[in-house]
Image 1 (cartoon, one colour):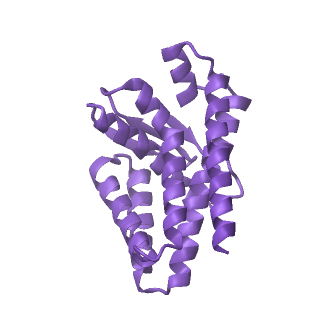
Image 2 (tube, rainbow, N blue to C red):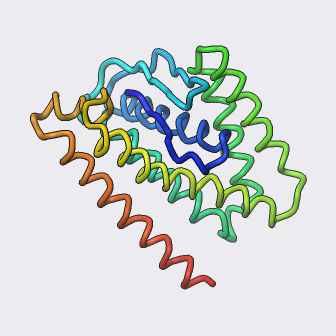
Length: 202
């Protein structure tokens, strides 16, 4: 289950965070359906792999793009929430990155990134509310954009790649492009819903 973030204008650490989130979503679904996480790898070229045998293959393969979209939407909603405080949410996200890295990330680059990124988020705790709102908004928006831009690049533009959608096509017989269109449709709907909520709160 590989991820390659191609939204080039997005800052490098944010792209790596989304790769980690994508692979963690695969792993979480594998665990939830009876599988295991052997290891997660995050590479300098914004690629990632989660080795998670067992469990429900269909749900596990589907969880990468949809998981990063879902987590991004949740982070965006919590960015301006009264409870929990944005400061607490940032700390929780940072601690989760550190824990995930310690438990499952096994390559040197991935470990270094996870440790530094998680620690940086935790270190923000002493800053003001505006900093936390900005940080969470950036994390959430990046994750949601990933669900659209990466699907377009890896699934629609290059359907021959060994992507999650390609593996789903091999598993189900449903063409790769169909999965890409379904995922982009869902991602667009969620993004539009978030945009409307943001306007309502403005």
